[in-house]
Image 1 (spheres, rainbow, N blue to C red):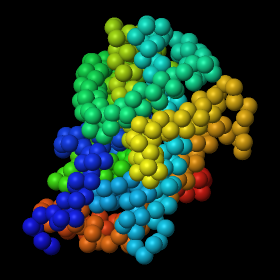
Image 2 (cartoon, rainbow, N blue to C red; image 1 turned 180 degrees about the vertical axis):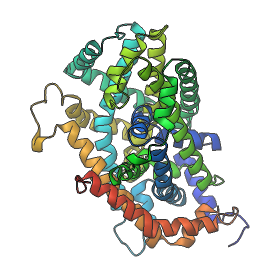
Image 3 (cartoon, one colour; image 1 turned 90 degrees about the vertical axis):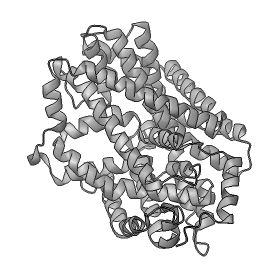
Length: 468
């Protein structure tokens, strides 16, 4: 393969990317991509699952699953996006062979992004509300019963639920209105370092508490007897969902990558940084949880019910609690930006809307979809078709159907339809990097291994292995 550099076609694509928006630097690429991968799950889900499923043993299985599921798919999505320099639907139309309907992957990704944002925006709304409550000092209580009552009062108040959701959507929409470079890149380049700084500060403080040794054992000491088939499936599922793949976000961000960016190296850095955020969050949270006798596997309630009770018993608890919810809000912001960018760029490029109009239309649609989720525990609590609230349906359909189906389809597209030569050209920057051998390995994984593993994750999510 020639090492003479990009062709004139690539140059024209670079010009087109500049006109449609692009990340301006390698740091911007890394910050934005990491911002997409990091989310609320880093703060509570990853550490608690690691501890509840065998500690270091679970962590090892997660890392292996990431190598066979998460990283290959992330690399594949980014490569598709950078090759086509277009939104997910247009990218797959451009690259699909002989008119096969691979572009439907982009449609499914857009649907998944809307469904995820419908319920995720409400969870992020609770986080934003708690930032305000923590700063006002009205959240601290050492009694979990009282912190539970405070949380219930928030989620069951339709006015507060809708108001804070609209605040979140307006905040994210305002960043997106600034565009790719001045909006997404500028925001994530500032927010990601702040996230790490707050985690290090909170973690350093927590490690001075009496429960620090127990917390570190909880997170890192192997308990091999806990490694069961169900635990392996949990680790595989976490590896798939954790890196923001299967919904077109990485494909979209890949279309903004610079031509010189090393895709495999960037994806690996994102994976390692994302893991670091999760482990730092565990070291920040669980020493305090153990020190004051709370349950570490409380799941989502850990953030909104247990943590306020924990910080209330610590010196400077009000400041620490505000810092905790601020870093949680930062983690959620990066994920929201990438999710909302998917429909925005599709509406902009496929429907011909200006970027501001595409952003406002996306906000309007989300305002309507999200309202159903926001009111699921208040006004619409009794409306449960099939035994699920609208909030639960949005989560179920996106997590158990659309995302894994999209992941399988992307793996099959790159592994079988697009072709190893074109894929290797993107991974090697048209021969300028020595990634051809790596491209061959990743292609084999995408053909034979990754789709099978994602199918197992999908079947587990649908309850096929409920007796495991």
